[in-house]
Image (cartoon, rainbow, N blue to C red; front, side, top):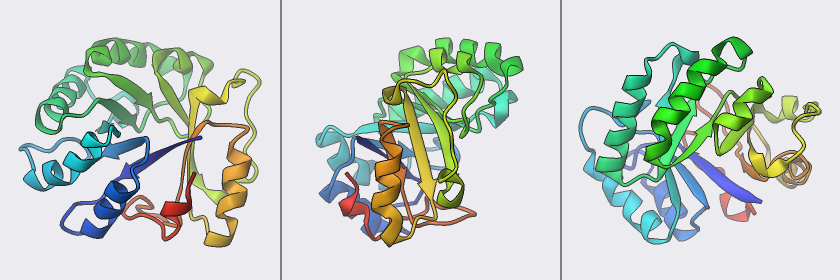
Length: 211
């Protein structure tokens, strides 16, 4: 099982969290400067990313696609900024549509972003199966663990290595149960105790025990 950390926190506000990531590097970190790369290179992010990149951590740049309403050319510009400013190895597309009527948009977007490295799409639910062919990794669950307990994979989702699940609001006593349950559905996961509106604004106390 691989760990993907949505690191949606600033190095100044959460410096301790970035130190913990450096001390126990996950396989993948999603970098979110300002719902994108921002308008200028932030030296604080450069500083905290250095030890992660040196350790071989895959860093992906966060891009908000506005459920298919954001122009593809803007996504490409932001992906290039991430790569130039922070040395990221790919893109994490968030707010991804799930219906078949937007599939063609994401096919074009995926083709345009292929040169920027590994691609992850996050509809947060099981989408039309055509989305799986557009990406290297598909996030098919993002939500609270109270909902996760009832999740059922559709018949087409037979290969856990294609999928990622992001589960929040998980108390420490339930963390191991959630991880065990996830193994049959997704090979890449992240589990946190954080809650809405931004469950990804820090690391959980049990981060070092995620496996």
